[in-house]
Image 1: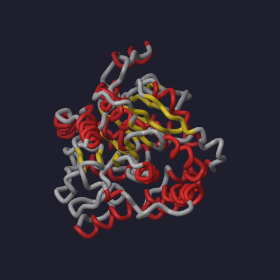
Image 2: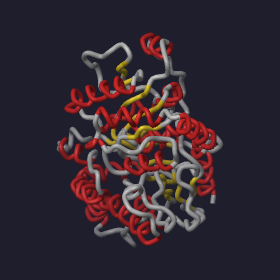
Image 3: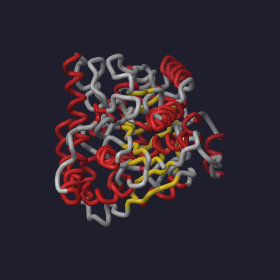
Image 4: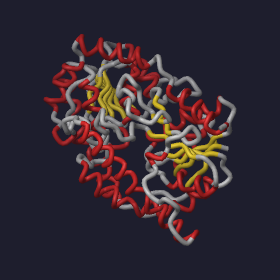
Length: 415
């Protein structure tokens, strides 16, 4: 049994589901560990699940702290927020370690470093699986600094040190807590494990297209990046009659949705702004994930969650918060992107979309107005941007990152 340790929101789990699907196709039993609220979602893809019973509600995690984590728009705020969240990891350390017991290999998200040390103690290999480039390089800036600072070899290296330090800060306390409690002291060679995956038995795998961020030449040969990890849907999505009719009743609409970073207290202000922007841009729109909205004009449809892989290629453009998975889905769909970053790595994906010529300039959520959103929509629908987006999608379609990384993992196990 291969066990995958993951954390985050629903969108954070999707690349790992894709990886698990490919591992399963290669004949290996695999399961994903996460908070119990994701069990139905993950099992729906035919993937085994090991539930962590603690969750934000049962642990009385401050909702304001969660909001801070989703709105940390500079590295200092990110650092402070990660520091506040570290106590949450203490409460689930026992369950994460228990999930590793009986496994033959551990795959871990960079925010779940307990997986590395558990595997070491259990005498089994571990694989670092990251949803974005994480390893130090002089060639490009990390996802917490890209677009914010000028790229230089020194600044690039420092930016990866910052990224790794933040992720380590969020998870090292859980390792300390468990090891001192259960084993009487810290693990041997306790420290950030990310750069230790340097041989074929313990490789690192990255979910990122080489047409978006090219694999750096100065990475160790056992850091593997072959493309995005896209989930294969197990059933065909059937749209509601209302959605099907809307899509067929006029020109392609603009998708606007902000996933898990959207909060109910933003609903009235943000929905009004979006409707005004669509009116100013003279475009039809689909607003996703904001629930039922009042006074919605006939050229706009409000919907709940829907598979991006089904919807995005039917849109004129996609406007979203810039989560790594949502950005990848937009790129793969071959339509222009309008990215409104809220926090963390979202700013990097927003800048990258613009730099690649497949989207508008980033508009941080704090600076969003109906006027600049309308202008961004118009910009994204220029012929040049539309063609660039199609070309990028064609390139991305030549990659199968999940399959190739699954082969690397199985090969490491056989060794």
